[in-house]
Length: 266
Image (cartoon, rainbow, N blue to C red; front, side, top):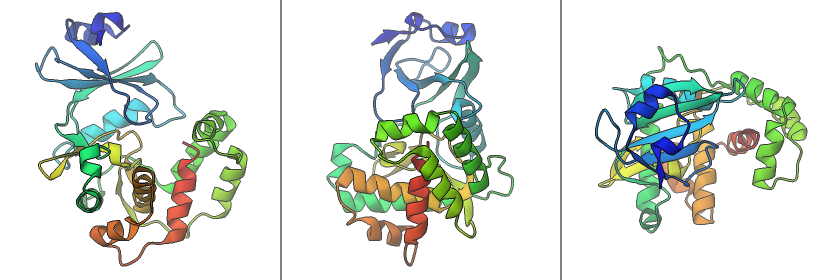
């Protein structure tokens, strides 16, 4: 447990969280420090605080704050309560989504039910009208961001964390050579893995960790969903069930591999 007063926070946020207790949340791999706040000073309810270095080269918490704002009234997601960049770090306070994330052991114990919910939730997200969406995560934008990360050495750090043997430059060159011919654009989560969905009473409560969200090819999410199923269950046996529940007659294996490879640089 940490007291809010133990952290160096922007003055308005420090005042808001005065007297609150913070518990570090270690689920997921967002790269941000995440804390569960026992009591938000304005709402009186539990909340979540994310703190991460501000960087124009990454999606960052500012992008997540914009995604949360756009999704309000459109799709279940946390509500932004506070955002400010302070001393080179972004601070995002948001409401709590009640329920258990998709990597919860009790949910994993019922794999077919979980996989169907996982796929149906993604299908609902992808059905959003994107005509007025200002969040652009199309492949051209993603490749530009990947190139910046490669040149800045950030992709090397990501690969080392994953234990990859290939170099970032090699992966980036392959991605440029093998770009898919077209994009089937939807509103994509951007990091659609099981810990980033929250379920309660047999249905979706909301999606979290939306820093990479925006208009993108649907396989940006489908590919990472399949990777997450493989990671959490130790097998690919559920990929066809996922595809069927999502509504795909068949998976495009080349796009699955491409978008998984692209994510290696992030």
